[in-house]
Length: 449
Image 1 (cartoon, rainbow, N blue to C red):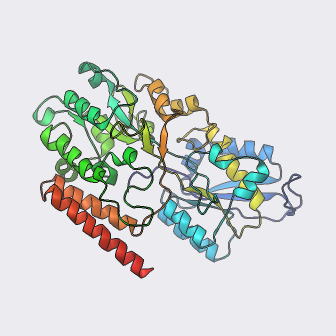
Image 2 (cartoon, rainbow, N blue to C red; image 1 turned 45 degrees about the horizontal axis):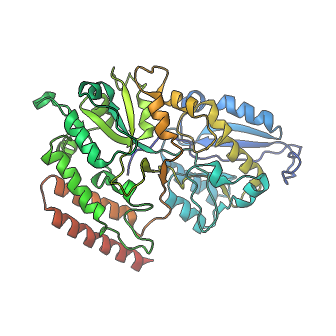
């Protein structure tokens, strides 16, 4: 549906014969040191230079003399589907895989329902930690925790500060609304014809067609808890109208028609100076320092993701990565050791490289911001960024369930929205069509279950 970040995917732990035991209290009397074979979905260069694997593996082994870790790429380049297929084959063949990585909540739920994942609650209780306080993005399933996220990403607004200053505008306040955003977009739009710079660009993902849903609807926006579609909520119709107003009434945002026909890439639009503001996930911060691929000289500042209206809490965004992450194979013979490494890598292990926004609540915020944005602070405002991403009052909107036929419903929503925004149908028809299509999809899926 949206970006796929460069992430690690799976750890396969293969026990090799030797003689020794784990440290006291581990409850595992396996002979010899356990060799953990860590299969990743990233290439060897990334494992070494980006993830700093030699450093944190050496530290882990020093702290855990009974465990050795070998790292090896499983897929070569990031591909969660390819990884899942290979991992499933290995599990079916009875190969030793103690930890599994899942990239989406629905895949985690499927693994839980199939009895593949081990609940982590007992291990956490033995350790004396509360995983929901230890990490952002934990999503219990049936009251139990099965996965720990390796990263989570909030949403914010990227702003070309040079253009902001030229327009005589101050940085938006923390509690601004989408109505305020519209006003900023008008004032930041300048130029004509091919040299026109738009105040705003919104990409082709589902929630950009009803941008207020992130703050207005807590949890899954497209479905009610009973699995019925939720398109009667006014935020969908109002959100479509809002985007139409930006593009067709104000002409302050690049149109859907141009976005689709020109196959626009949001990074190129923003770093190329074609739009002054870009609502996007915090993963894009890492691209600011990548001047080889995105040459630019202007400074980027940041604003909170606007709330839909005054009834919503400021700085409310969905939390990408919530519910996904790593879990333990329920058939593992070394669950204690697997849990130990899982906890290390998703906490202290991240501190060696800070390559992404860690889900660990005790992470070094300043170091992470500087690692993500880079050393050249003429290109971005690290203080503004840190204040938003690590805002202690930020409302984390986590999706905790999946609706029946959800991928199809989301695709239908995008399709009807686009048809309206390019002038192919009325707003009334768009809403009537999506309601009927969602109803039909859900009925068909439930009938097949």
